Each structure stands twice: as structure tokens, then as C-alpha cells.
Length: 201
Image (cartoon, rainbow, N blue to C red):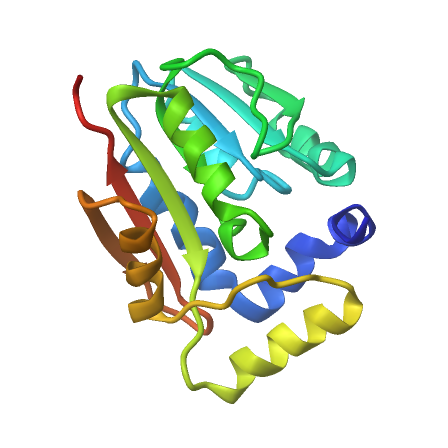
């Protein structure tokens, strides 16, 4: 698997290419987490966002499909007793309905062949009145961004979709989400954090 192969150098690549956004995204996500929250994070990768969530949440279940990525995250999160790392498929989560106060899925939606199935699962496990927090890198006209995407694709990454600011918003509208706010972390490759409010029942 591509993500297992690059797990050991992923942080290095991100910090060389997009350090400001890579760090600030975790900081901004953590601002949306409360001290009593039970949080599920899908596609946690090396734990870049997880480490900020762990400092705020009562409990964090950080999951990823890549064993290599989880191995890197374990190193980063070993000092946090409130964190549990689990291998999981974002489209088939083995958690009960309404299990988590916040559900985070960072930089994964554009990689999924069935993003609708993933969003349905994220929504299912989130409590009424909770939030889905979905940060995703967005492209603009910068040639450096396009070059970075091509580079990753040559290495084996498989981008199913690429978003800009407008198409990212349109994506959630098409998926039926109406109560969504957005926060863009500006930088070399910007990250758009979508925050979806789950209605009270």
C-alpha cells in the first residue's frame, strides 16, 4: 500500500513543502474540541492533527487504514493516556450509532472512491448536536500545487477528486449537508476545514 510505503517520510515531506498549513490545521481543529469530548479521528495518518486533539479531548480514538501510518502515529502519541489507536476502514466503522461528540477526517475525502459512504458513516457515529470536522487540502492556480499533486501521483497516490474552494462547498451541498461552515488555513497548499453541524433529534 502506498501510504504504508511513505509513512516514514510523510512528515518530512509535509514539513518541507507545507509546514505552516500542516501545523496550523491541527491547531485550528483543536479549537473546535472541548475538554469533555469523546472524539473519533479517521485517517489520522502520522498523528499530525491527533496530537493537538489529544491535548484537548477527554478521549480520542485515532484510526487509519494504513498500518504504517498508525505506527508513526503511535510514536507521536505515546505520552497521551487518553488516546487509542485502531486500524479501521472509514467506510465501515465498527462503532455504534451516536458514539462520538466530534468526528474528524483530515485530508482523506479526496482520496476515496466512495466518499458518500464515508460521510454516511461519519454522520452515523456522531451524536446529535455534534460536529463533523473535515479538513481537506484545496488547489488553486499555483503551479507548485499542481506539481506536488503530480509528484505524489507518480509515487502511487490515487487522488479521486481535487477541490478548490468552490467545488469543496459544492461537494457538501450535493451530499445533502446544509449547516456547514468553512475555515481556510492559508499557505503554500491551503487547507479548507469544513465543520458540519449534526442536527439535534
